Image (cartoon, rainbow, N blue to C red; front, side, top):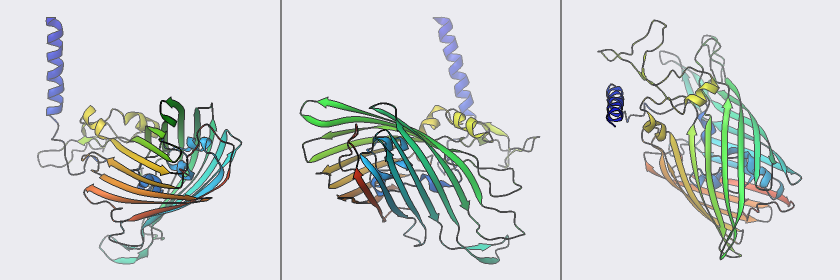
Length: 406
């Protein structure tokens, strides 16, 4: 017993000493994980936008590509497509936004394919040189095109893989005196979807679902032909459950929760001297005081992202974003939605509520969403987002009816 106590005491002293040497955990945003092409993390559809960016385990629709492409295999529609637009920073400018188009088709009852395009316009920007001289107006833009294949493995389980090409042109002009070029990358998604129908006394159509998706597993991106610095793209793990129940023949309710985490290295804490300058080691790199070297391969970076936070397990947990939502449908024709999104103040401090509504009539669908920020400003505040959907030719009923959610 005494030996165990001594070991525990020594271990506590070591841990306390290790963390006592670190500076206080900052709240100025320096712990935020940054990546290239962050537009890939913007919710492109108004349905998920109205549900607090929830979508990994909700019922399938045309925009399943961006949340969990494995859901396509459970769609009860033969084919369909969607068109969406997300205004960005509308309170400041009116020429920045994300446009998207997506289409899918079923192959029999067990398979599905889909493809999509996202285009992010950054509006008009005046390009200047190092001394502030204006060199001309440019219109930076980024886009991604992707395709996916989904298949049922059983009545309750499906999977999907997706391939993506990403193009980022931040300086869309040719200045021979500057070593700049568009950044490109290729990436893949891996997704799983589980649906289980339940029998609950007094309820019909009850079901529980679970989704798992790792998106943007891809090559680092560089904007220079000579620079050795290459940035990670936003590889993201997303998982969560949903529960659906039919109150009666006309009313359906779904509640869902998504957990999301960037699978890229956490910024380390670099050592500084007495004057506050970062210490450079013999190898020319910054000396790391706590944490791990972020200059690693994509695969190693994904694995390292689970244990490389300088402030330990506490900081790892802070890197998990939480979103919760509810969706109500009446007679498969009209829906109202609400959601909540939480991000730690150390990792970006995005916290907001969302509201949404949807209409379905024959092959036509229309979704709206509105965001209400809780902490700080948000690029989507005071902005109405919309998505148009078209679904055709009801396929043979699958294991999971969509109940008007397409």
